[in-house]
Image 1 (tube, rainbow, N blue to C red):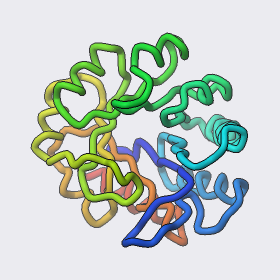
Image 2 (spheres, helix red, strand yellow; image 1 turned 45 degrees about the horizontal axis):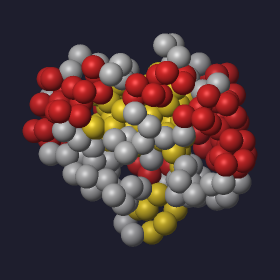
Image 3 (spheres, one colour; image 1 turned 90 degrees about the vertical axis):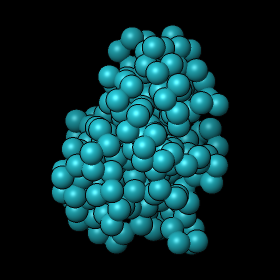
Length: 217
């Protein structure tokens, strides 16, 4: 079991407090350093999730993270924004149920790009696989403050989704070192986190600890 995705975004909430997800301080350079620390700690996949940045700033951040991830040999995908992903040459994109359809994302990015799709039901998961998704992001498996509109996905549904598809399933939403063990036996291929690592002073150590705990799944 690997830490398949370290999501970095502009803000996340932890215990009711807003924090900068990729860095407790501001500045893209410092944020990029935090992502580098996560990779050094064992993160194997990076997704850029930005809801509040303007297009130009989003583009610049995506370019910087694409370069960083390429240098470290880690796949880099952009959340929702297919045009940004294409512009910076990202390895792929992750789309939700209300975002650009998987088929359209594949058409725009090509056959070699990684396409991830969010799913909350078996029906959504099966359809995404049929449409050519490379992996699924399923959640929220636990309560999360980083996505206010996230629907809850019970553990039993997570298991059913994993059993229904052949592509990798990544659990998302509220996962941390204290609860990740509850996902044991679900069939997931990895986990995706934000505040579980980026809200810590020692990001590398926090990532390493989570990777170690996820290994038992």
